[in-house]
Image (cartoon, rainbow, N blue to C red):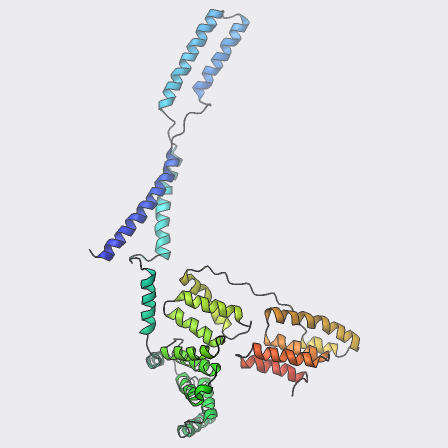
Length: 413
C-alpha cells in the first residue's frame, strides 16, 4: 500500500470515528431511561391510604395505636417501592429508540455526503505551497498562441463569407500592405476589418504589426487590443503571448479595463482563483455601469469566489434615478423661460448628483449635457462632456453616443 493510500485510509478512519462519536453521544441522550415520576399509580395509592388513616382517626374509627400501626405499614410499603425504583428505571419507548437510530444514520450519512460534495474523495491533502507550485507550473507550461489557434481552428465553424465587394476590398488591402509593412493606418484598418469578418487570428497578426510599427509610442490601448484579439483568436484562452501584451498594457496604464479583465481571466485559467477574484472584484468596483467587460465579469465572479474559498455577495444594482428624457427637453422648449428653467433645473441637479456619485450610462450623460445646454449652461455642459470622455476612455462607442447627444443639442459641431 502506498503512502497516499495509507493517508486516505487514515483520514477516513479519523473522520468516520469523529462522526460516529458525535452520533453516539446524541443517541445516548435519547436512550437514557426516564426515572419514575411522582405520578406513579402505586405511589398515589399509598398517599391516599395515609390520608384515609388520618380521616379514620379523626372520626374515631381508629384508635391512636391502631393509626400508628397502619401508618407504619403504609410507610414500609413506600420504602419498599422506593428501594425497588432506585435500581430500575422506566423502559425506553419504541419511538425514542427509533429516533436514536435515525440520529446515528443521519449524522454519519450527512457528514459523508457533505464531504463528497465539497471535498475531494480519493485524494490526499495538498499543502498550500504545493498547490501554488502546481499553479505556477501550469502557467509556465501552458500552450502558446499558435498551438491554441490551431486547436480552436479545428473546432470553430468557418466565418460567414463576406459579400463580393467587401471580399475584393479586403484582398486589395492585404495585397497592398504586403508591400507596405510600415503603413500604420493601413494595418490598423486591416486589424479592425479582419476582426469584423471573424478572422481573429489575422486580426491579431495585423494588430501585432501595429504595435511593432509604433514601438515605444504604442499606448496601453494598443497593447490591450492586441491581447484581446489574441484571446479571442484562441477561443477565450490567455496564451503566454497574450499575457505579454497584457503586461505591456498594464505597465503603461494599470487602470486599463480590458487588460485588468483578461489578467484576471489568466489567473482563473491557471489555478489562482484567489488572484483572479482580487483583480476582478477591484475592476468591478472601478467600472462604469455600462463597461463592456462588466457583464462577463459579474457572471464569473461568484464561481471564482467559490473556487477561492471567498464568501461573495453580489451587490444589488443601484436604484436608478430617472433624468430628463429628450421628450422632457422638447416639451420644455415650449414653456415660458422661467417655467422651463425651473422644471429642467430640478431634473438636471438630480441626474448630475447621481452621475457624480454612481456613474451612469452614456444615455444618462448625453441627457445631462443636453439639459444643461437648454439651460444655457454651455460651459458646464462642456465640462461634463470632458468628464464623460474620460470616464469612457476605453469605450469608443459610448463616447460616440455622448458626443452625438452633445451635437444634437448644438454644443459641438
